[in-house]
Amino acid sequence: MKKILKIAAYLVTALVLAIIGAVAYVSFALPNVGPADADYKVEITSEKIEHGKYLANHVMVCIDCHSKRDFSLFSAPPVPGTEATGGERFDATMGFPGVFISPNITPFGIGEWTDGELFRLITTGVKRDGSPIFPIMPYHSYGKMDVSDIEAVIAYIRSMDPVETNHPKSEPDFPFSLIMRTMPVKASFTKKPDPSDQVAYGGYLVTSSACADCHTKFEDGAYTGVPLAGGREFAFPDGILSTSNLTPHASGLGNWTEEMFVQRFKMYGDNFVPEKLKPGDFQSIMPWVMYAGMKEEDLKAIFAYLQSLPPVDNQIEKFKPNS
Image (tube, rainbow, N blue to C red; front, side, top):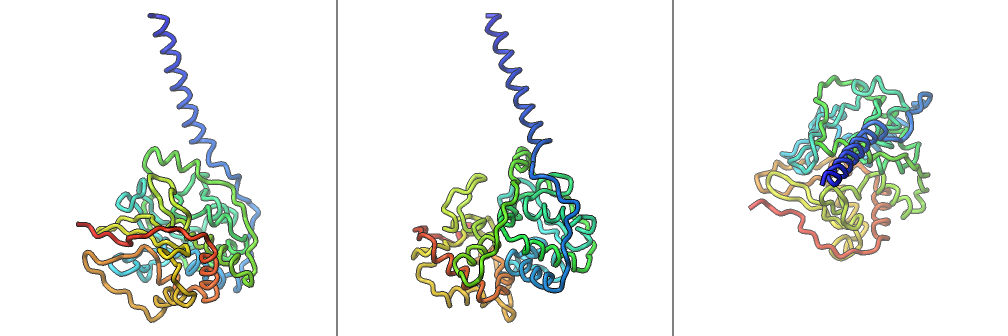
């Protein structure tokens, strides 16, 4: 009996040491994406700034999350005056494992960052101190973009006026605080396709816009659905929103024309005035007002790419009001 107890004690001790070792490894060795390039410097030109402005506002929509959104209005447009200053809160009420606050990305917030540190953050999700960010910023997608596009975004945010803010720090729940450290991977950049190859270029824009992040079913901390077939749920105070199926099935975009697709975005352009929502009204997580500024040729390319996907039968109930 004593021998059995001794063996059991050894096994328990070994297990505890293994767990401690694993936690220590994750805590101190990860993420492992390599150091930021201390000599990396983005050349600032007016062309880069303008292109970065387009990407940050209408394709990658960085400004959407890095502003405070007004969820009392349809599509929750950024509150005027908060653009790029951060402060938007993502927490358990929306299904997030902790409290995450978007940071200020004006020069007030990033002034001490080198270009190499910003580049690593955007493309791998690793901060200056080596810790990871929550992947609500789709750095896995940004790490597959063309380097020139990332540089354009850096040039643009460098050109902004600094706006002073004081936001609380993000606080991930345990054990997600450890799991987050395993998520960053080294970037695998691609060359942006020529726009004349509409499907390939559209696929690049879909990656840059991280469409699949929202338009893929997500359950228990993992993607479980077919990419871009919709079905991811977002909790709102008045009900559950499910994202649309973007594949060319009749339950998705199968009956849509290119003109219908482009118009769906452009209807939220400069003349659109977001309506004040009443309790129980349909709300959308989609930042329509920002995507409305996308160039028509880019929207057409996205549509061409989506139409090239295998059709997936996935009928979506877009909004389920709370009973």
